[in-house]
Length: 324
Image 1 (tube, rainbow, N blue to C red):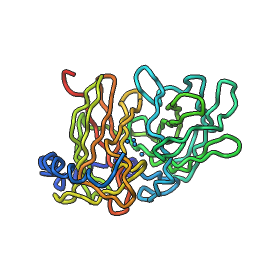
Image 2: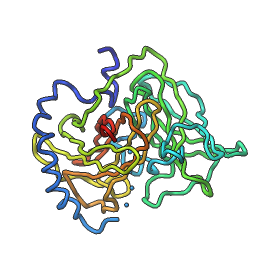
Image 3: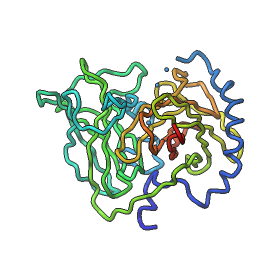
Image 4: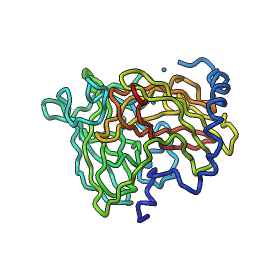
């Protein structure tokens, strides 16, 4: 493969690592069932969802949760629950300040959210789960390389987030937020990284991933049922041994996940079923999520979790359940 082989988060499932996944999937459901009961009982927990912001750093940079701004996944199209499809909704518009960015070099994504009067919006509600005001992420249009970014707003109303794009091509910018007095929105706009572009292809279904430098394996179980709520279960292991030192991320959840529909790149809320854990709480090897997708199709799912003080990421591909 060409330079695309070096891209972050793009095709993380290497063929040479297949042996490390052998047998893990078969045992993961049983391990999860037993460990979830114990792992969930970490204390008084209450309920919501975002790897490393890679803010101008390399793939392995570690960022604190307070630097990853995520307000959960907002709704850009209230009729379908799809986020990031529209650039303008409910009188609010997402406008990038510059749409062309360099490849592999430190750069900055900048944008404004303007109201119906054309002026930048400067007041936003803070989510009750303690996550940031603005949920910013980028994803290449071949549904590879999802990255959450750390964004801050300047006095001029412009939001800025440092980033280093690991691949050339067209990238989708997502911004989820709730303007004070307005609705919860998730808007999107395209960005461009010029150069030779070779799109990645993904298997129709991929439930097993290697995460965090390939030293941990994650199995994703459950079915996506369109038109209703689906439950998904991520089970973490290391060389066949359950990982039970999962640490809380944003909102006190033991993992956060994003679902993106292939085709239109709409993203949907994926809610962890346990949140509100204290910083000292630990869980594992399972993390349970709930998600609703409106229509049949193929979805890419991006999981982030923290283990051993390291924020880890892995990717999956799931079609909706046959006949649903």
